[in-house]
Length: 221
Image (tube, rainbow, N blue to C red):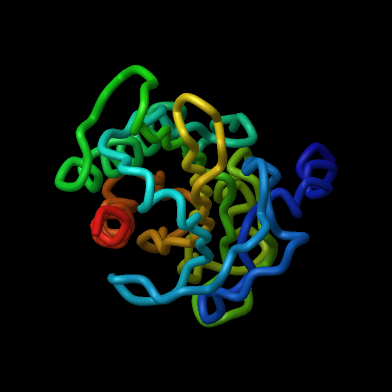
């Protein structure tokens, strides 16, 4: 009963069901970002699409440095037998380092606010899972990552998608300067017994780095 009661928070994830579609509807935003206005679907460097909004001010006001806040898990997740606290923390750390690594060629990394300094906040906000070749079953918050298993569906592979929301602000004024929501595809789990590891997510994070690096370079042109 606990499992089904928690399905009431399905709409807390950010993108549509379906690996074949990246179309986003407003009722699928997580609520993490302070604003979802102005988001537009754009092609990414690594392929596929994402939703993104960037203020013209971000490139016209000589931003030269960034603060990268620790990536959080939103809502706060609960580990289960397939997904441990350790791998969740490893994943959030990997995303933080991905953003830092993508920024370093275009910006100086700093730890405190100041003139010309951007603050980047990010959150892993949801997961959608489905059997290979079938429509996704439901969109779930991170708290239920891969939690349903395959008991009722045999032993077919499960596709795994992870969702990210990013917000960029002026570190001094707090003015919102950019937002993004996107979906990444992790490696499949073979069954409901295989444990998720950071290895399943490495290629996805690498693709996110390619795309984030490209965006940073566009900002400083």
